[in-house]
Amino acid sequence: MTRHRTLLAAAVSLAAAGAALAPAAPIEAKGGWAVTTVDAFSTPAADAPADITFTIRQHGVTLVDVTDVAIVVEPEAGAAERFAARGTGTVGHYAATVVFPEAGRVEWRVEQGWFGPQDLGVVDVGAAPTKQAVPAASATTAASASSEPRWPLAVRLLLPLGAAGLLVLAGMQLPRPGRRVEAA
Image 1 (tube, rainbow, N blue to C red):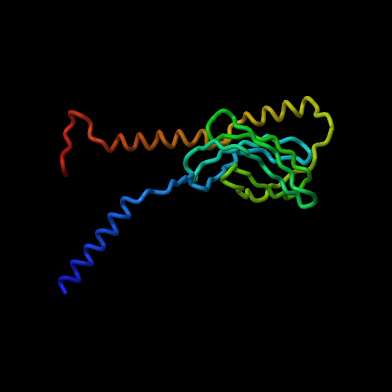
Image 2 (cartoon, one colour):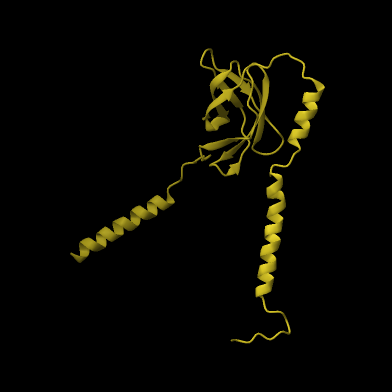
């Protein structure tokens, strides 16, 4: 019985040594998946160019530069259109000028080079812009409206006053230096 164990142990040791000394086959691992995150953009209009910027991260973490990057738009009626993306000069960041051919819900995806495509779901495309002139007063009103604060006046006034009141109350509860506090 002991002899069998010794022979078995010797055979296992020789197999392990042989496997350790065998030449390893070259392996090229690139980590085959990536995640694309599209930056915020305004609702695109049909037949109008829209600048879309996005980021590609290998394994959803590491910014990565790849070649052959594009946005593909698939309208409900019509063939898919491909819009090549270009690097912005920062690793992993890309930009593409996309023209959505029709208003409504349009499917789209990003081709991430050798990582393969990533579906972006559906984007709601607005109607094509009209060629009407915008009166100067409307443009001024729109510009001034965008510079107004987000918070209502009551909140902007009451929030700092409430915070100051809380600080005063907290200060009243703290013992002052040099003052003796006696228990009742």
